Length: 315
Image (cartoon, rainbow, N blue to C red; front, side, top):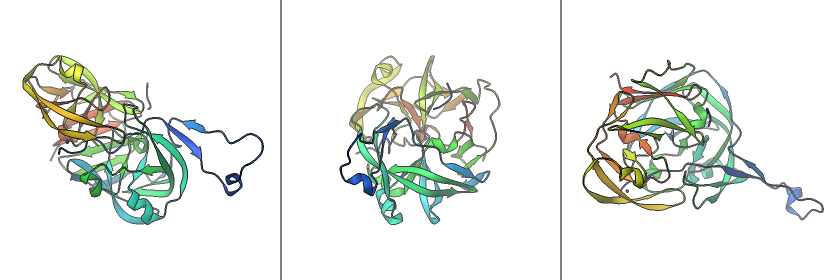
């Protein structure tokens, strides 16, 4: 169905379903007789409008996170991480929200993909976000939690929602980013694979030895190349003893991370990934492959046709 670490930090934020509450108008702030406004629950904010056709620009890697520059409300440029594991559209740092004077227009309940311990966060409205040759208007945004040192390296996160109708390429090897019209060819079992969607997040078929799993494609994960649930890790061929590699924090939980050396190769289609260890537990099933697994690769996402290509970067 089409739709929808001391170690480093596991994730900035991945919003699950959110509850939008209309911001009170001046007339509503005083008690009113009769029925009270009801809370409107939505799975995601409304999509922004887009102008322009294509964005082509350089990217840099901040601790592995792909980062591009963008303007917000005509100001900037600012640094934004491109996170395929972040549902929805935009997150901005509290500092940027203050600099831009963003006004709260509502509230949301947000959390990581586990759905545990959701927190209440404000919703802002951004008039415009522009990068490359693309401009998006009417963008709903939420604050970027300050989850550690990496948060200081970016002003916000651009989520997968912006690219649902564009062909997105993150070329780690060539340090290039592109988004525009186009489509991937049909899956061939080699570099192009069919994907599924888990609450709008992309799940790719990952092979570990002879086992096949669906895991999230999560460029926002720069902590470990591969996260899997502990029960799955227990069934894989591994070497040695598990070791603690640190603690990771998501927007709503903190977990101790352990790692094991894998005794089998890891691949997507026929593309062998430079993954030799598996970390566990995953913040939520089904686990994910992150940016450390994709170094020297070019990753193209055709969200509309539910396909992904992962191939060595052509430098």
